[in-house]
Length: 209
Ligand SMILES: C[S@@+](CC[C@H](N)C(=O)[O-])C[C@H]1O[C@@H](n2cnc3c(N)ncnc32)[C@H](O)[C@@H]1O
Image (cartoon, rainbow, N blue to C red):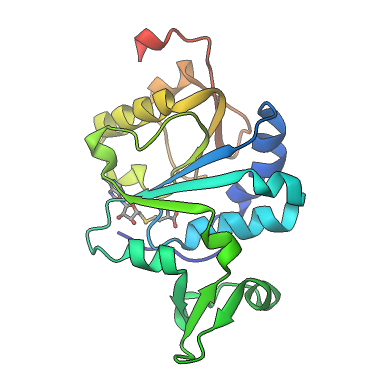
């Protein structure tokens, strides 16, 4: 259930600069919630991609709040320490590996991700089905390969929670294969036909959700 890898769904992550960040108001901090982040490969892929594509000034604004139910209780340590085994970084392009990871001197099987990426992440163990958001005023929620594990009602409830924890001008991004309940149509507008990037419809009376 916690299957993940670096640079997974890059086609979705690539949408963030042009379709999300260019369409939110100027602000000091851009808050992203990575919901169901597993061991953090996804968080660090997003941060590496943004570091590579944004200006220094824009990148400084990015903060990621990440969460997972983490039945194995190991993600917090991995994410905070930014440590990955050699077999976990096989999908990282060599130039990116060289730029953003250092090999542990004591254990050459371990690669540590740079501190300037780690300091942008706040991780919290969290069950999405509790329906209590881990924060508010998010500009973007990324939830990939997670909703598929929930039944239709649970999906609707979780998406309602996302809706409430997003700012008025904000986005929800999922993997391309995720099918959404009809409910979404009145609350989110799909931005691109073949991608699951949705913009919040903020004129919807919040009492309805
Ligand atoms: C297949 S992984 C996807 C990881 C990552 N988002 C990706 O796309 O590579 C699904 C993740 O969802 C998490 N998950 C499943 N049920 C959850 C729940 N109720 N609340 C929070 N996370 C959950 C699992 O622990 C797992 O890490």
